[in-house]
Image (tube, rainbow, N blue to C red; front, side, top):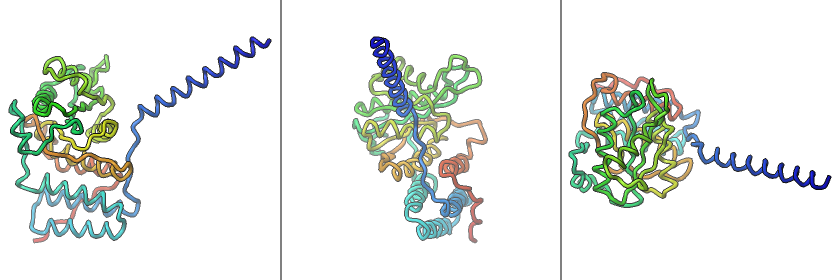
Length: 301
């Protein structure tokens, strides 16, 4: 009888231990959502996003004044909302509205671009490589191009880590291949990049997911700065979204690495929707912030 009770106690203890381990695994695998904008501030931030789009699509001399007025209204409502909104507006103006902003396309040798853009060769710098939809479970040429660009930059920054982000995409992908998994295989086997430098996020299904999941990996490895590698038409779009998520992440967790420079696979898209990257980027930022994006005010004459 005592032996039976002892076995039962051991069995219950093992079940409890397994449950705890499973819970810890689930917590580790889960990416916590980031939140930030107050309910009262959402209409004001939505107005700002609309005015950023107007300033991009219909430039005028009053665009900067309108944006400044939006930020002043947000600041009067909430200082925490203002920190996020100001980060988004400042980065947007540098990336989309500054005619001097330069993209660095991959030429095979990234050394000069690294020097000009100020990209550090440091173990605390991350090269974030964004995925592209798979076709029949395999990488399309555009994703191969992004990997080649990432490999060139990785050779120019041999101390930096790489983060490949992208889930199991594509209509016909029965084996569940992921963008990130295939990207790592290609970088290691075709490009000769050391496997231990490459970390992967195999869950992201959107650019916003890319950003959130990449920040989790970067925080785990003490990364302080990053460079995004993607296609040329997607570079500004990707940077704006990563910056917006970074502003939320910084407020919630007190951490977000600085986006330094860029490096991209130079390609023109034949998708007319993607050519309008500013509108898509702002719509996705609005979705991340949970705000309704207003149409934007007409530019003043």
